[in-house]
Length: 276
Image 1 (cartoon, rainbow, N blue to C red):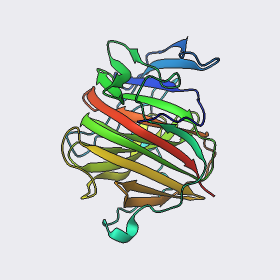
Image 2 (image 1 turned 120 degrees about the horizontal axis):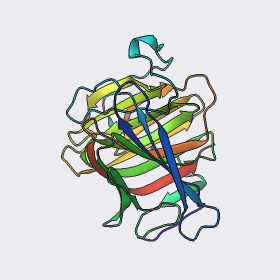
Image 3 (image 1 turned 90 degrees about the vertical axis):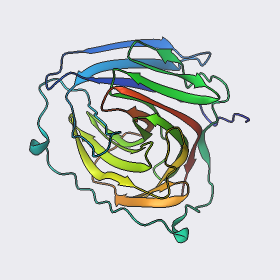
């Protein structure tokens, strides 16, 4: 496959580990990514509390940076987001016309914007012309990129062997983000992370649109038009919801999570397009 890049953006890798309700500390380190001038890559690890369990063996635990003991899920107000899974049907396929690309990467060879890095608890790197994430004690690792558009289409091929993996979106400060992830058993989930607490927007839901076996490749795609985001798997509509009020950072990401701290997934054919 031929690699095409419209831009090389800064990539941030985030590794999270769960150690209980008290935050113990934050450690950061940085390095220069490949031959891209000024493309500094920052690796950040920090401690956080656990989050709400999922209903399948591939459930996730996720946290965010905090400077004081985390609040419980009952103390966190329910997000003003609505989402309803929809049945798969031919008329729900993603058919919007292609617009200007802002990212396109096939991961055939190492790229400066997507570095390789390995620690005792997690790693990211290139395996068989894919970008692979592995967890060995951490519960989450993510890679975030700039998102230079308000209306956009994001797509990536995801192959999950263990855990849940997919796309992060609607990122805001200090510690809020959403993600859609798929599991090896053919289910998907959408969660909101807010001050160390994860709230299910869509709980783990089996879908016939998803391939059901460890390591199977599924094409995840999301489209934002104004206040509406629609989610697709293999060109079939999974669900949509209304974007809540608030200011969001111009970023999106790739993510791998695992409740047990053991996980593995790979990504391929990342594509980002501006929409009118």
